[in-house]
Amino acid sequence: MANMLVAGNWKCNKLWNEAELFVDELSQILAQGDGQGQFCEVMVAPPSPYLAAFAQQFDGPFFVGAQHCSHQSMGAHTGDFTAEMLASCGVDFVILGHSERRADHSETDEMVAAQIRAALDAGLRTILCCGESLELRKLDEHFDWVKRQITAATTGLTPDEMAHVDVAYEPIWAIGTGVTASSAQAQEMHAFIRAVLAELHGDSVASDTRILYGGSCKPSNAAELFACQDVDGGLIGGAALDPESFAAIVAAARGVLSPS
Ligand code: PGA
Picture 1 (cartoon, rainbow, N blue to C red):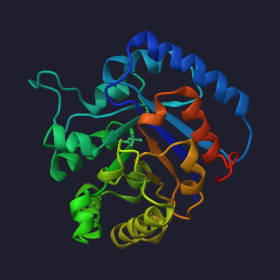
Picture 2: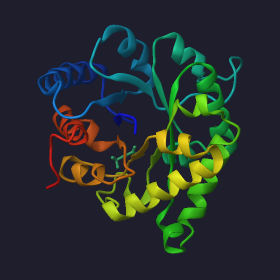
Picture 3: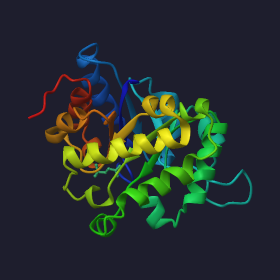
Picture 4: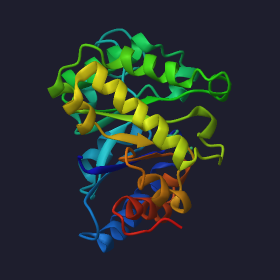
């Protein structure tokens, strides 16, 4: 299994001066824990206006991620930006298919597939988000839903390209609600996602693909979630806004913080 990844998704939060303070504090805390436990990659995805400065100014101990890129090429698309633009200013990762983008910006499976294609062509690493609503889970349609999302986004990608795709399972009912999926629910879906990846791309890609959990993951539950066999890290929203809680989640992924 590859290294763990803990990725912070700031969404639409923090002013620039707050972002600078965060970077200073996080860098200091992470430096203290350096070398402890197993290696864990860390990524921070600030709002888009800060990306170039983040990537170029801060030599922090984390990768820089965007929260979106366009499914279209450069041209007359006011307000939009491409994966190539992100890569050209030093961004490493892009989060794609987040449920908030699917809901707020009507992003379809086809658009998400085109974004992944563009991001991989630009040399970016991608985090593909999937996850069901509470209604779908109650109807017992959550497995079909997630399978459809993964199939639509990754069909046709080569094993080399899949090496640059992490999947994030984010049940919509757990995002920002304080309700976390139980470790049993997370493990069940993560194992299912790995089986879907094996069906689509073969066993080796399936076992090498990181599957992150996202949805009210915080210091108090991270260690238990990360202890699940098929949970390879987390995509963190609210708890990623505070350097101490984000660093505690990184410590949990390193195995330094035990399940409480
Ligand atoms: P949350 O968000 O941790 O605030 O639930 C996770 C996400 O949406 O990526």
